[in-house]
Amino acid sequence: MARDDVRSVGENNQVNSLDGKIALVTGAAIGIGAATARMMAEVGASVILADVRDVEGAAVADEIVQAGGTAHYIHLDVGSQAHWMAAVALAEQLFGGLDILVNNAGILFGRDVEEASLEDWQAMSAVNQQGVFLGTKHALPALRARGRTSPEGSAIVNLSSVSGLVGSPVDPLYSMTKGGIALFTKSTALAFGRQGYRIRVNAVHPGVIETAQGRQTFAARARKLPSGDVAEARALALANHPIGRFGTVEDVAKAIIFVASDDAGFMTGSSLVIDGGLTAQ
Ligand SMILES: NC(=O)c1ccc[n+]([C@@H]2O[C@H](COP(=O)([O-])OP(=O)(O)OC[C@H]3O[C@@H](n4cnc5c(N)ncnc54)[C@H](O)[C@@H]3O)[C@@H](O)[C@H]2O)c1
Image (cartoon, rainbow, N blue to C red; front, side, top):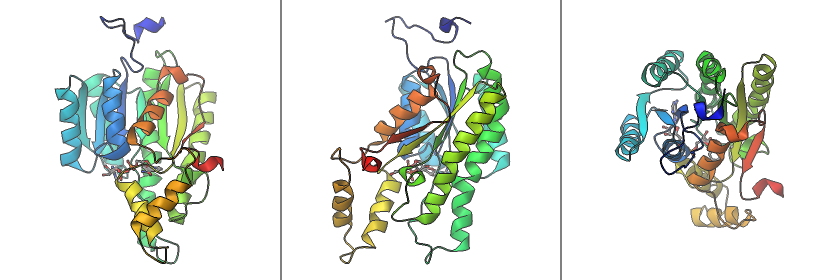
């Protein structure tokens, strides 16, 4: 199939990287997910925003539509099988299928092993790991179907973390979930590639990004300092970033969009690190 069958060229001859694509982004109400949904719509995708924060999620979808984009919000707890089935059915019904799944929803508690309870672990793994498994499983038929006619196939992007590459200084349970996602990404990439499914699977590994979760990590780091001072914890974390700043949600959204797009057609099973040099040391 010619590339232009799926990539439209606008009046200004601008080819947008996600023209004609249908994407589902979890955890899209705030933070990295919201930025990704906004930017995906700007570069041509029809976007389903999914989250448990209904008021904020619906507001982001409305904002995208007001700006001329195509978006719809759905309540989706990523740990729920029934919610996943409904979300994928909605993408098919509204937009005709699914090309891109961004498994972005994730939580962190910032607790050491001594502090964390079994309930903490169960709650975290229900989102960070069960959510990624269920999303992959239930989106698979729809992604396979669109992958057959898309130039470089469909794409899954899983949000791991630098804490999925090196140990988290504040949350060993989080590191366990994010390290698992990194290898689930590689394993599913191999399986789907070898089975001829035309679905690429890649992980992105953000460093310290200024979001609600990013601020949670500063608070958790501060609890480990004699001063307990959050500003000091921020300054220490910043000193660890060779590039001289923390990341923004847009830094991560751009990387997600790149690996989701046909421009990354030869990438699968990869780990893309967006961390200002934090883990290069
Ligand atoms: N911010 C960082 O520094 C950082 C660093 C590395 C990795 N990450 C990862 O990036 C992803 C996004 O992080 P963020 O900083 O934007 O987080 P955030 O806390 O700002 O937003 C997370 C979103 O996920 C949603 N969510 C939580 N539980 C959910 C569930 N059960 N079902 C559906 N949605 C749910 C929340 O409602 C929220 O909208 C996460 O997977 C996170 O672990 C973040």
